[in-house]
Length: 190
Image (cartoon, rainbow, N blue to C red):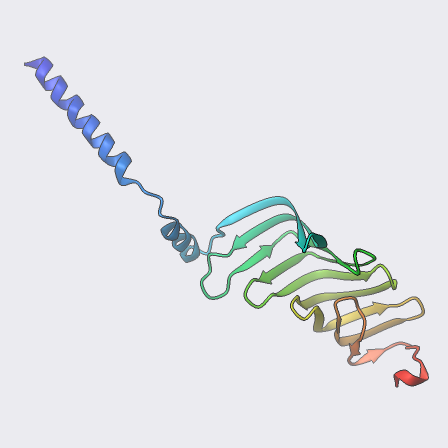
């Protein structure tokens, strides 16, 4: 009788364990939705180094200590760079490059607009132009920078301070607002 009871209890335990194992499923959509509801990233990368290519040519490099991937957001998927970012863009087959650094960044996938905050520095290596600000928006489709925050633009011949700045991604074709400092121009530029 004791042997029969032992077998019954073991059988019940085995059946219960098997039922628990087969009842657990990881539906990817359910997991993404759960993470989105809890405002958690779908993925985290540490010491990320990403190279972007177009037609086999390197167009930019992204370097960051931490990347949070919130691509599970239905309306506004984005990536967060809470510990800073460094981006190097390459134009004209790598001859012209621009480096962008900041302490924090958000990059929205659908609009391709990024917001970079905290000690933002953009440096054009070809023309030796340097932009410094605390907040910068970057429209990657249009290859365009803009800010309404204070800025300092350093050129080989002058330093310009102001509030409100717009330019192409290579720091050319500026629109400067509320500026102080000396600006050298050619007669035809005015």
